[in-house]
Length: 336
Ligand code: PEP
Ligand code: MN
Image 1 (cartoon, protein in one colour):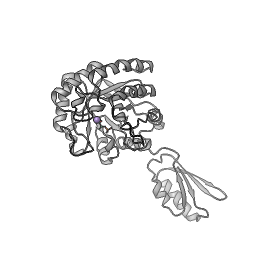
Image 2: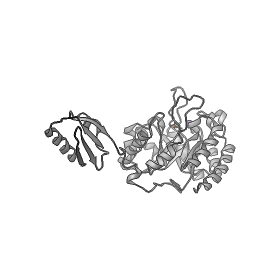
Image 3: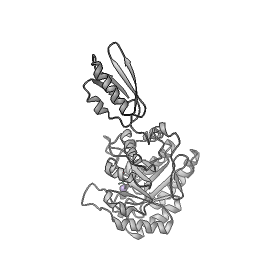
Image 4: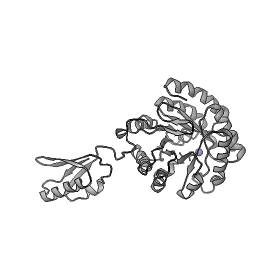
């Protein structure tokens, strides 16, 4: 971090400021120029609050030169993190596909879909029990009953389950869930992130609708700073001026996040596009960009789905897609 002081700052105030930096645990390199005094802060500046420095009367400008996230930063952890869920290894070198309906609707539905996606090669089962819907009049999910049905599907197929948490008050219901999903709308629910950081369960963290890559990594940092390093990032499309598709898939996020962080990154082509026919081309793009996997919505009867039917693949289309993806993952040197 670089701190530039206002011209002619009194020496006493400069010394006080330098002492303050040292008390924060960072060392300083002071450059006395003809016009400007520039102080470089050296060491771990992730806990240094830029705004409070800027509030000091002798400070003119503060610039960060290193990222504000530490635990999620590849600079401090060069090895790729591999998150293990049951037999699945999620991270660099592997390609896992999580599949299942947007929402759990009934026992027959979830078991039928679970069996189908397992047969096609999915390694985890998804299904929403708590649904964040734009309208309060839309189907909100089966809540605790939905989780119970997911566990039935796990019993029938052996697939670990992924489901979304919307509030920390429901955490006890998630005791047997394998991966807890934090949806796009809750990416900056910091209280929720802190609580999930106290658990050792893998967390699938989705990028917010209008959040930057840095904000995304800072949310991962919240979970990790509380002690949980099992974080899987998920790019699921962002809001742009485009209206033909539900969201715009930010494919650049994949190589960028791989460079900036050691955490696994997967793509959600279903929510990124909002239409079933775009899921295949976006999935292929995800493999080529270096993603570690996908989360795809599959429904046994999309026309009758209670949520997100238009973006859901039929089991038959999912099967075709998986055959296609296997060849591509192999070409990229990933185990699928
Ligand atoms: C979901 O996965 O069902 C979901 C609601 O996703 P998102 O939070 O990305 O909108
Ligand atoms: Mn959905």
